[in-house]
Length: 249
Image (cartoon, rainbow, N blue to C red):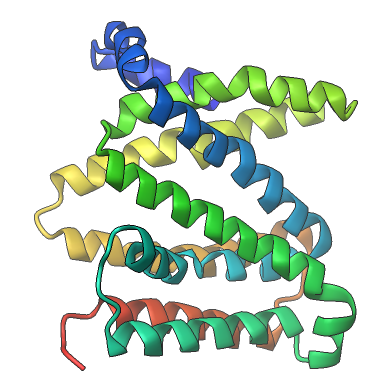
């Protein structure tokens, strides 16, 4: 469904005819990126959601921005400042608070596997964005190509795991996630960034997302939001804001 949405946008832009040639020109990079996202990223992320509370998995997932800065130092040769180090420490302390759920013993006895899956998803997501920056690809063409590439790969994985069973519930759930997770939302974000007079103001709106997610998690899943989740999430987002601020340390 994501592939259909993204290709539909290319049709609207009169650029769909560019997709085959674009794939043939950039196929090594596109294949590698497709294996990272959506193939590997969602395999790992969904396992985190299977083990952890939804509020824990989504909060930990927001530490990907800090992971991105760490990978940028390693792969892109960027310098790590004192601000980066302080933000990283604060963010991952927040991860510990969220994962522990108010009980450190619980973290090491039952949650550690889920935490590793969640942190693994942040690593994969950060790797994807670092490589995307390195390859300097067209955002929409490359994403449409990657999701088209991933369809047969994920179909094979699903068939091997005997999970390719479509019911009305699973069909509409897959349609919803595909359209809004990396379909319409990605396109509207690109349009917002393109048309904004002040990009930084638009970028800061992303910090509303985790708190809105907690409202959905509470209202739809019935999970009571833990105080530790709020505290840890504030720590993670504060670390990201601190890192992005323009003042010097």
